[in-house]
Image 1 (cartoon, helix red, strand yellow):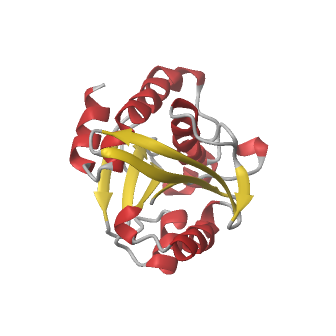
Image 2 (cartoon, rainbow, N blue to C red):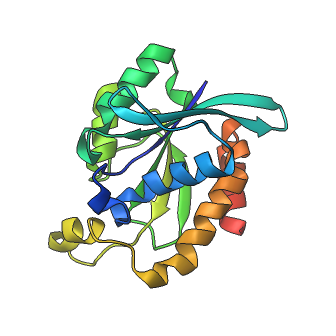
Length: 190
């Protein structure tokens, strides 16, 4: 089983925040690939489904932790433990300050780079899970980071955000096959 986690904050007032880019990506995957309804489990909203790949069907659990961004590790650890999902079968989508808006990178392992959601997951699982980083840009001043990530995307951001989410949903079968480099390349070429 593959576990795809989107990081974000559950309160509706945060729905369009930059910090909810992970939630947006996972929701787009659920819609595009016909996943079942969202239900509460593991302190998260989860949806079951399959991703059709060239190698066959991959059973997948989508997750949006409801523990708030900074405590995401609890929900991820609970699901990974229950389903006995290894870290190489966990992909976490999250916003990335250190990437320009619209840039997209995939990596495995590493540090948290100041991202408290990633820090929480590292504390729960260790660092060797897969990450899909959605660039949102940096406000230029460290003191402005929190208000920046908790602010809604600007309407003009739709020119890159909507096509990026579409590219992620189109390429996600490559992610399901473990072809992270091909997944990243396909998303960025779209």
